[in-house]
Image (cartoon, rainbow, N blue to C red; front, side, top):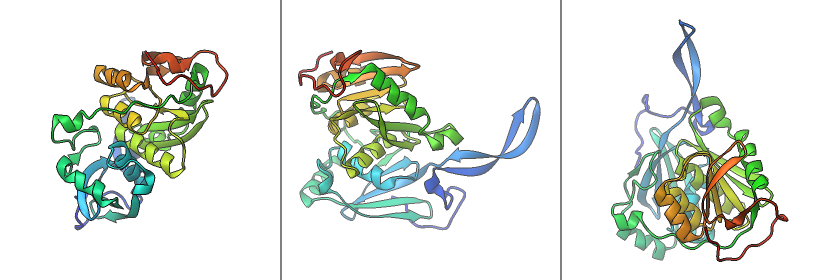
Length: 294
């Protein structure tokens, strides 16, 4: 985990929580070079310390770290309830950040077997898993949730475009958003890592007591295996990505009963798994049968 040391060029700026730094650059445009400044997304090591022991170091955008820590332990099935997590503090170090948590000792004892005190890079959601069995844990079957109109799905996706302040100035971050059954976007979180953005969203949802079965998630990345696994673990019934899924993600979504949508942009989309929840014209907030099939 990060340890205090003297500042260096690798250390984040003092205002790193803003999510970006203003750095000097040389810009070539129309054949002319000029010195200017550019907003560059922050990326820093974030150490999660659980019950006094280092657990994992993730490379992340250093904002909303309390949400990130809570979402991480929930989406990774380290705990099942928000009430089992106590945030002890978020500390800025010279070369990163540290988030300290306390969980029940019975849960913490299981982590010794998983041995996840490794490094997870911002582009990787499973770097901390040491064995295939750990990485490929089965996803629980998600609750029925709501049937969602396609117009609600695209309403949320359109709203997501204007709710990404870090990406607006850097062009370098992903976002994950949570919408209710009507497509009203309730929460958005950003991060350089797509899975970190989803963890931050999950943590923010639990902190706000939002029911994961009463809406859907939209993400600005591809729908990879770990994104589906995290969504299913906390009970999200539908995950929509602006990019493509992987075949493994589709198979997992089918097994978990999670509606998986890809290439959701410009009022178009592709349904890859469990499409019964997504209906073109229905009354809002209509429950669907728990046996959702593709």
